[in-house]
Structures are given as C-alpha cells and as structure tokens.
Length: 389
Image (cartoon, rainbow, N blue to C red):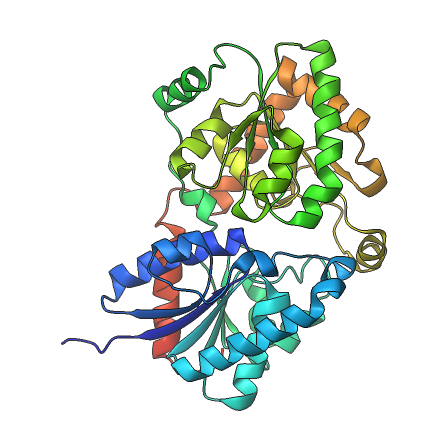
C-alpha cells in the first residue's frame, strides 16, 4: 500500500537546531519517501531540500539584553513564519529547539488552526530551571523528542507524549587515526600541542567570550610558544570570529563535518562555550574546559531560577564533575588557562574526563539506532496516533 506524501513544516532558529533538522529531514525522507518539507532552517536543512525565506542568523540571539534591540524584527519574523505554516497546511508542525522563536510560532498557529499537530524536538531543560514551561507547552504541543534519557517523565507529567530518541552526537562515527593524522599534516601542525577554541555561534556569545578566549590562548602560549590553535566557525559569526582569531587555523562554515570532527579529535584539549559543543568534545575524546558569560541582567535572573549545580551536559549525564566549568565572574583568562594547562600537559584529569565522557555517551544512546532515525520514527508514530499523551 502506497501512503500519501506527508507535508511537514519545520522550524529551526540556530545552527544546532539546523543540524538536528537536516538529519531529521534525511531520515524522514528515507522512512517516508515523498515527504514534502517547508519551513525555516539553515545550511544543513537547505542541503536536505528546504528553501527557507530568510537567514536564521537573524534569530541567533540569546538573553534579555540581546533580544530587546531586535525585538521588532523577531516579532515580524514570528508573524511571517506563522502565516507561512498556516498557508502550507502541514500534517505536522515540527519545532526544533530555539523555544523563544519556534514555540511562539507554534502557539500562534494552534490559536488559528487548533487541529494542527505540533511536535517539538529537544525537550526544554525543565529539570534545570523554570519547570512550569512544560505545563505551558502542553497547551499547544502534542509530542516531544527528548535528547536526554531522564527528560520524558517531565514531559509526560505535563500532559505531552515524549520519546527519548538519543543525542545526535551519540550516533556520530569516531574519527580514525588516519583522519586525525591527515588533519594534522594538512594543517601543518605536526606534533605540536593543539588547542581547539569554540567561542559560540551567536554574536553575543562571541562578543562576551571571544576576547577572554583570545587572552587565554596568549597566556598558554607564553609557556608553550609552539601551541597551535584551531577554531571551528559557525555561519552566523564568521566575521566576528575571523576578527578575533584570524591568525589561527580557522575552519569556516564550508568545512566538511568529517574534517571538523577530525580537528576536534586531533586537539589535545579544548576551550569551549558551554553547550552542545561539550558533548562534541566528549565524542571526540578531547578533554575540555567549558565557560560562559551572559549579560549581567540575564545572569541575575538565571541565578534565581537555576536548580542544578552544573550547566555542563557531560557532567550532568555522567553524574560527575569531571569537566571544569567557569561562568560569569569566574570566567577569566587566568582561570581558564590554569584549568587547561594540566589537560595539555597530561594529568589524571584527562583520564577522569575520558571515563565521564564514555559514561555520558553510553547514556545518550551510543551503540543503538542512529538518533535521527529514532527521531524520524517517533515523528511518524506521533502523526499516526491521536493527539495527546
């Protein structure tokens, strides 16, 4: 029996969501040939066949002080996306992370078309802060795809169905020794110590962390003149990162994913903005130091709401504190350089991070079906059953 083609409207507002969306689209097309896609996304989703009407770089903002100056444009884009979704009349609206944008669109779509099925990919971190978000979501979201194994109960308790589909990084193929050696040779690194630096994919993040990370590199080089640095660059912050790290090895948006992964695996240590990239380093087997600085107002609000003592996914999933974390006032070049030095030189801290990373990746689904395939099957099953938990 030939099934009729599905019509799916997807919304991703930042690079991490774009990567999830691109993999999901490919898996859905394989599971249900003929599926028609429309919506908002970036280069990965464009490669999978999407033709978005505007650049998602406009949406890559975070924090109150960052959002307010751009609020009129964001409101206009929310309205335009809502109208596009309604005109497309999808079998399901799939919102991918970026809740500040995507869920606002979903709520408005459901207000006009109550029968629209809404699926949200990446459960909100209600276990960390603002637990009431899940209950509010349940008013206009039917089904949730969770990346972390402990998240489904929070969603089902609020009234939505939810599947743990695994984190995409858990399904990533590890770089081979040949790929790692090839990257070092092609980049002219040889046997020199290599530090990976990832200051973020949002302009505000790079503005707050870039200078601190650059000074950290300078301090490390004072003791290790031979130190080389590789910097993966997101499409949304190409100019900003180039201005800060133009003398280093830059991996631009056009760099193949396999080469980016080989660079991470080749690095002796990494200095990263706290977030999904911490799991990427874990998958690469690269010990890391995580850092973040928000605006003072955003930080003040978050401090009153946060419910966990770590913002690092490797630490949280592995139930350890193996990855050093530095936030706000603690995020200084001196502190970061001090934490990175033993990782570059070799220490028991490296071994502890490797054990924590292995535990985290196993919990996130390494060894099972690809997370994108599990996500696609979850989407299809959710569309086939009645809305609700």
